[in-house]
Amino acid sequence: MHLTPDVLLRAYAIGIFPMAEGRAHSELHWIDPEERGVLPLDAFHIPRRLRRILRRGDFEIRCDSAFDQVIQACAEHRENRRDTWINPTIEHLYNDLFKAGFAHSVECWHEGELVGGLYGVSLGAAFFGESMFSRASDASKVALVHLALRLRLGGYLLLDTQFVTDHLKRFGAVEIERDEYRSRLAKAITTAAQFPPEVGQAELKDFIAACAARR
Image (cartoon, rainbow, N blue to C red; front, side, top):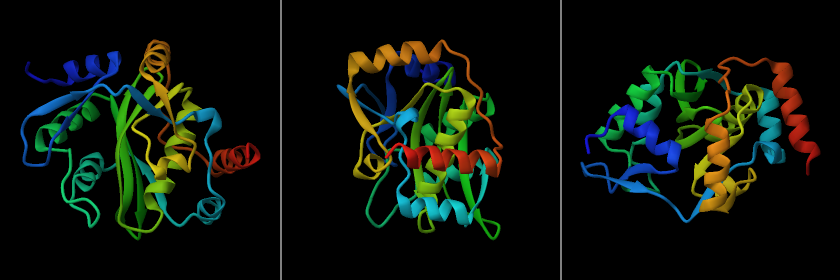
């Protein structure tokens, strides 16, 4: 099958997503985990130390201003990861999704340099988080909080993390069974939502307070 942005969206709509074995591998594999990672937006947790960093405003937050740079950074080799599942085919496809309005990036900038961020796919009221990176301490964590804030404000119902890591558990990520995931997905993709690229300090302050009050 020739993989196009339209095929990719249809795959997300039924609960599967592509990954490559490595950066140099051209073949893509469809992934359909028995247990799916999700980050409940109504139970999002912000660790206490990160709340202080968010209030200080250490980073300038932008959305969709450097999507191609974000995905390139996510594909870079790291000290704790020798290879990546993001190959050139995936980069090309997701850049096409972005141009069509179905993908977004949340970026952390410092002194004019991109130092962290994440990207993902948006379909209806579902957001599928793909990857994140950080070149400065806590930058990817700040980007994740700003993503969750925008999804809450935009009326999203589902934040799919694909898998659950120890890092994501700190924010409230959980695993759910495949059937439960597909039920939530079916509702989310048929619900209208709007990704808001800009939010004010008042919205951020209220979101931090609401998250703190839940714990």
